[in-house]
Length: 330
Image 1 (spheres, one colour):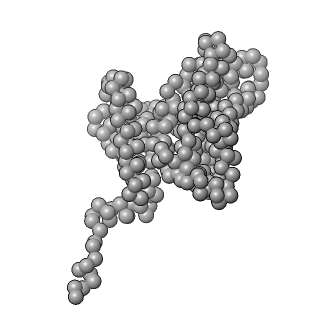
Image 2 (cartoon, rainbow, N blue to C red; image 1 turned 60 degrees about the vertical axis):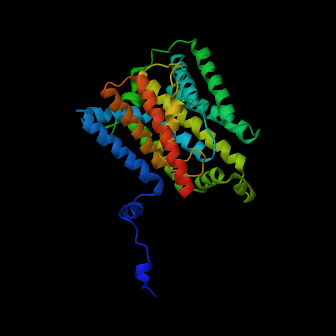
Image 3 (cartoon, rainbow, N blue to C red; image 1 turned 90 degrees about the vertical axis):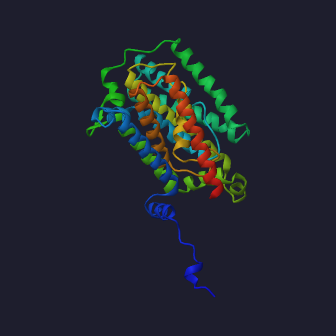
């Protein structure tokens, strides 16, 4: 009889390394973080000014809007849904805030109404998905067109200019030495982290995406939480609209085109399963940073925007493939 030690299979070096890392970093975060480090190293090698303070601040500012939208998208995808209307909702909220302020409505009320408009769009999406059982992709595709049309009708198709100078604080200002958009982004992520990782609501959202029927049989009101995640998505899109309107100092009815694709890309690249039930809000932040670094580096390298779309598409497909394979092996 051979000694027990001889029959034991010792883990390989790579497995031991992953085991050590997993003690410090949750699984959904580990691979996106490695991807971010690889992309950053590639940009450091291929460009001379990537690590400059001005460029890093610029990356953070550029990432902020997509990352804010991606927070709501994460909640929706975790529940097994999708929201294609976020770019249009962002444009509608931003133009509404600008238009109301120009019309003489007090600024706090104008901002509140703009944010509520985003929530209302999200609630409408959630109602049709949760209570009428319509496919999320069809519902949000329809509301994408409706919200964009409402923004164009409200503005007549023209930007709304003439906003007061103080309004730029949300998009160009500083808080405690940091860019305001970055502060807003971090605040939104902190709230989402508490919601998803530290409350029963978060556990229900994960459960719905993982196995909706089992969650329903356990007594959880599925429709209520589906309505909630789409409302959150509408709210984060409206917050992004506020920041973008402040940065541009005008309400742009054509803003936010294709922003939903970037938000989905950030979520998927951050390790969240497109099928729902598995992922991390911190992973989404890492995914948004990865996408922002990639865009910034490709621009600095002079890569054609058309080729950039191809590169991003390939990376998204690769991220979805890796996510699926990890789900099968797990």
